[in-house]
Image (cartoon, rainbow, N blue to C red):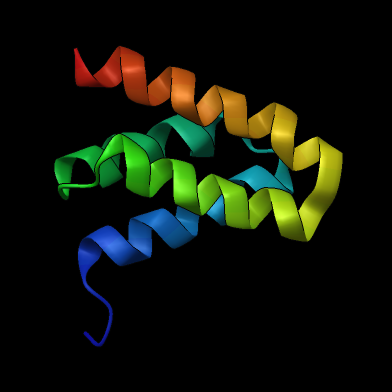
Length: 73
């Protein structure tokens, strides 16, 4: 693959944010953690989704950070 697993999962989080798929947010955040993504990388991904999708992405981005914090424990 041209893209590594971590990159694909970070992209998947951004897509999940823009499509407002709560289950997808948790699943892809978990997969990103398992692929070695840091909280900072997830946050940078969310910032990109927010800039492309405005307010709705912000609200759903908070869910991804909550999922990261819960799943990382």
